[in-house]
Figure (tube, rainbow, N blue to C red):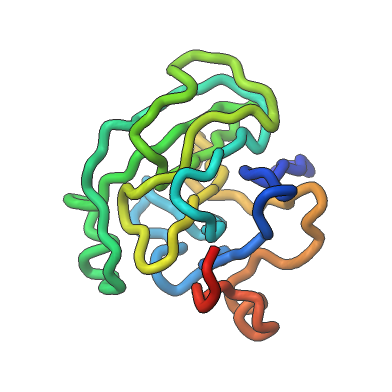
Length: 181
């Protein structure tokens, strides 16, 4: 949990089940790629394209980058993790404590703009086909400490279970896409 702060889930749980396709420390992309790119504690929530993405915590929109057209639905990490090609639509929200929430794999229709104040639970975007989405449509969420560029562990209100990929995998809770979202 980032400094004892809990986050709301970044989607409406009344409309969508909590399905995690890659938990923190996940094998495909949730690790430290470089000194300035750390995805260790990121979580991918399996959701249909076009799902409303909600602010997990109040803050100010620092970046609303929703112009990307590149996406990759394959499974090869060499392609998906290639920083020269891996471009995803994303929104970054700075919270009161300075941490930043990153929301990725968004559609190209902006709902919020830069420097806009947002409340927890406010719609900020729609999920979409951008970046490395692999075989399961999802949104990627993580919190970064901007002083260290490290991702930080988070906890979600109303979700008491582990977010660790291996723990989820062992308990059969990693969403593999066998059912329709």
